[in-house]
Length: 416
Image (cartoon, rainbow, N blue to C red; front, side, top):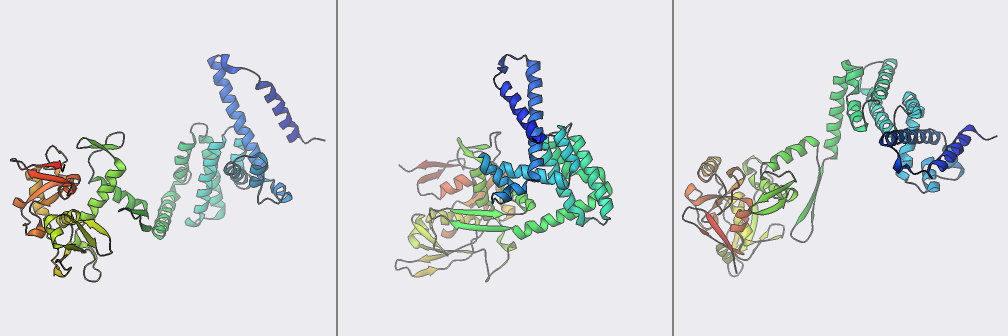
């Protein structure tokens, strides 16, 4: 005697054999619409039935030595293992915990995508039982109300909307518990985020380093907000127009990260061994005076002399100047920075980047010493000018010549 489940599956397959030979292209729009809806409902119900069967078919996997029935099914049908395990999770959830949801799936009242979202939301809510001080019976009633409400809302909302409803379901079925549970859940999430916080710097050997960080969401948002304060306005396509060139937003954010580090107030950072924010740079006297050549950082990394001179405008910098026999001539002193009051005065005077033709606003610019401070230039308004990050790099780039125009702007020209 053939089991009705197998007989029914064979009947469905016989009907499908007849349907696949039909040509639906000439169906009227109304009938195409009805057919699409009917097949979508049937497909979901078949998937729900399969998930129900998977939930009680562990003996099939055991019989052939597979780890679980999802692995067996993926192997035998050459289907995706991810899809099979997803179906297994839904079937087990409905079989053991959410029978009302399982019935709605089999009846076609809820589709499979909605079912996954609802089951996930209910499981998350069930895991919050330890956060509330009520009896098990009362908490079970809350879960039953939540399941009924989400199944009912599936008639009106898709998976994305149901996910949002599921996140706030306690406010609907037990508002007196919602605030307590949310506060405890957020506190747990914040503790987990702090434990998982990490940052790793990998030097790539090409003059760049790869920084990978995992941060709490609030910290990441704060960093993003700070970086965007250094970037010029973005276009709708996520790219920036800067001096006639189009620069991707990701590159602008990378440049903004560099600018943010240079804008940190060293006086407000922790000390380590006296001063953790001072950079020691070794360079030849000729490189210091001409801006040509290279300099060496404390960890052995090499940068151009022009970059070292640019950094002196915005960071604490101790140059160890070497003579012709590499004998230290001067260990210098911490670079003198423009004060906040001077920055405001420069912004009022210059209003924007003083590079010829550049319109980056003053709030995104850096203060530059016209006469380098390392060479005796004073940190005063007469010796200061605002330049955007790009032009501040160019003014210290030995590939470019620059000169001041009568109106005080700086014109750049690439060396021939």
